[in-house]
Length: 181
Image 1 (cartoon, rainbow, N blue to C red):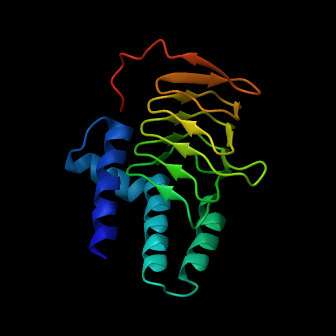
Image 2: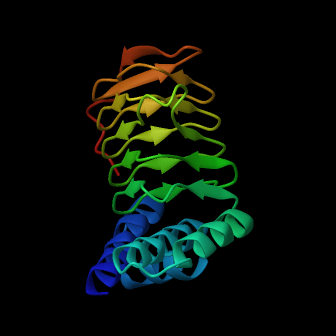
Image 3: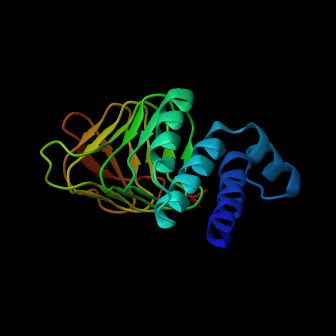
């Protein structure tokens, strides 16, 4: 239980930084009390605890509730990093054993999964995933990369890159000197 509460506190700090640029008490309280993203993450942390303690059906019930209420589907074997931020949660699907790093931002209606049951993506820290983007297969999205709206990523994306188009083409980021959130 200490691990779950520690993760929730860490999530609140990271989300406050992402949402407001500050981690003061007011920003943290705002995130905890008003952010759908925090509620999604809290439900997911509760699901992780239920799996860790082998409590039957709790993970399933919470997943169904998460999907029905928040409009997001997160598989039971997905690993979410600290402060993952769902700007718009509706239509986000993260499947299989995908690994999501710290402070990753989802802008809505995203799919992170597999196209051919050949593996799931790994998304490193501080990545932004634009609205409608799809990341499919055993690909790695490098830290601080940006995935454009409606892009379909089927290959690895190096750190500090931008991926746009269908299928996604990869370019170096021009704003690499910018400090990540």
